[in-house]
Picture 1: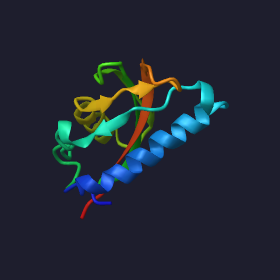
Picture 2 (picture 1 turned 120 degrees about the vertical axis):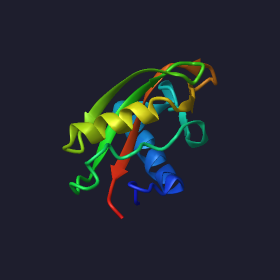
Picture 3 (picture 1 turned 180 degrees about the vertical axis):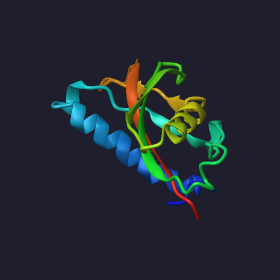
Picture 4 (picture 1 turned 90 degrees about the vertical axis):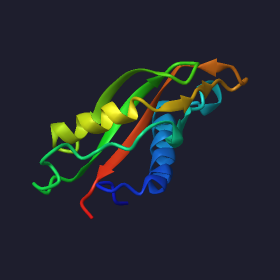
Length: 125
């Protein structure tokens, strides 16, 4: 996956895998836990490489967590695993935090606030 000139569609499988993995890792009994929300890639712009970081050859994957409310809005975010470059981490968190998500649902179909993990890979083409 190339993210300096992001293959935006290529990000979808990673997002789904990370969200599913995070939900499984946190839910010993998946039948009683909320199902994670889905990322709406069309609702926001892809993160832009911070000035000077591309020229410096900075690359890496950042894993973030977004707290999604029942209306699909992001109410909080945090870096779970750094890319090794604070500027890249914050650029991804800021841009993707403006995206909309489909809210999580409880096993009986009720909307529920929940944390969703998202990974973004910065890589020079």
